[in-house]
Length: 314
Image (cartoon, rainbow, N blue to C red):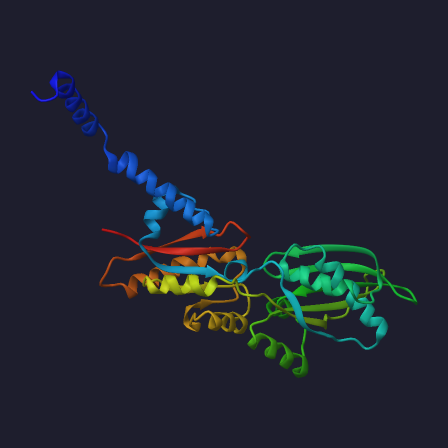
């Protein structure tokens, strides 16, 4: 016997060790998981769910991205255009004061951009205010404003076009055309409406348009390359947004997302509800193949999120 009894015993020990160590599970899988997680982290991706998340991601056939904060930077938008609809300098000071008081109370990126713009303007003094945030729509409040002549009370609201419509605020053709031009350029719109109140609240007038703002939110530098990589893997790209359809379509066009794959005008609380209908539609599209399922995936950087669709395996 070559090597003697010691070598013979070592051969048996190695055989037992190899037989008791299922390398594919105990070594290879964790190693692949750790390496994959590390590479993902280097590219700004935090994976929740471990190996199961990687396994499900490998079967994606649809990804639905939120626009703001996911495909766009969502952190430092800027006001590129604005109109102040005032009859004189004093009313303009009131409008700037109310706009700043409303937006400074919000953490929304667009609100921050408008608040920054207002800070540099000649504003009246806000003596008292009560502000309410309406998620997905805007902000509303009452204000006591001190002008050079007296103290006046106002009710005001700032938000999307849909919010303006809810208030019944009219908008004439000239201002409406400006908004349409801004939306076509992919800009987000915020409209300020206000109405004066008597100090006793006994007299009220209807809301009127006081100001309109257009903000631009740059695309993430990596957005185009990420979407291209997904398309090259046969993944269908969708986008969901709370913005108006014109703005969302313009942003989608820059990223190569067709208008048919864009769901616009959706409140934050309603976005998850838009996924089941899409899942059912995918089932019809893939009638000759396994159906698709959709699930939310957090981007871990904002309140926005993306969603992935995985093909169920039989």
